[in-house]
Length: 293
Image 1 (tube, rainbow, N blue to C red):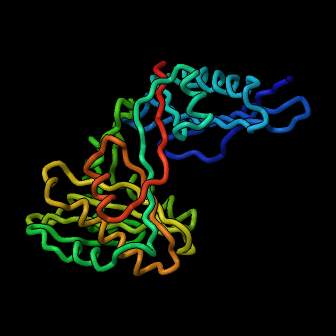
Image 2 (cartoon, rainbow, N blue to C red; image 1 turned 60 degrees about the vertical axis):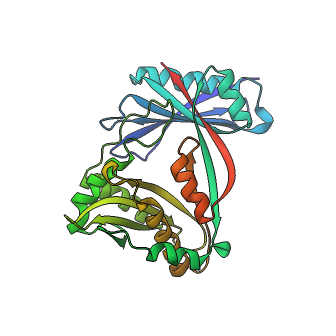
Image 3 (cartoon, rainbow, N blue to C red; image 1 turned 120 degrees about the vertical axis):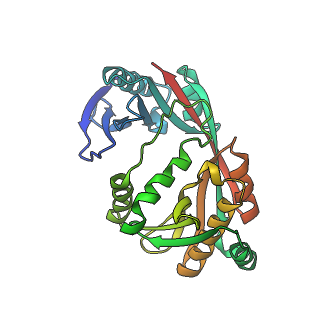
């Protein structure tokens, strides 16, 4: 089969990464596969690239994926990357392809969903109503209020030690500008960002947070983003408290919303237990692979 690989330009460039794109086509010019390489450029992750590769099912096992893979890996080397990561559903063709290419498994992710029609609102209210001496919950929609921006950005350090297996993920460095730009990105695509945070009453600082992104029309499934508690404040039930408040708020504010989605590292026993207690149900697993360059 005659195969052509065409490099394309991705018009979307963010402050933290850029993407390199390739399209595979057959002799008639019909697209049969694609590869996207996200090259991270921010401090703490400027050693890393993330690969997403797709081949039309009818064109698999003909060398298309290998050509795209080799092209993307060569580009990652030219960009001075140390590691390339890629993800595939457990047991999927992509899973088998990445293993065959010599990538090693570094992380397994468990995906779960909470059907809101089955959510126990009474239990959620009891969890939210339980006192947590020395702490209180606050929430906001969209971009963090100016008065909270600095302490909220600092609380993002809670994610620095989240279980990532053997992934060479680096450290995501957060500041106020990045917090605001992330919220703006959600708003620009028409979705709604809801944040619940735990505040240390002794000094008024934010010590934990959980984020939920709801589709702009308030229908379908919402997606949990980060949930974290700073190390010095763990063991007080803040993660469960915040997440229960987030679920309850979604249920009450978006009556047409059907479910909430989240994923957790298989090794993150604490957050998996929280999700189980709140009624989340497993849907599937994916495997994170890494190629060391």
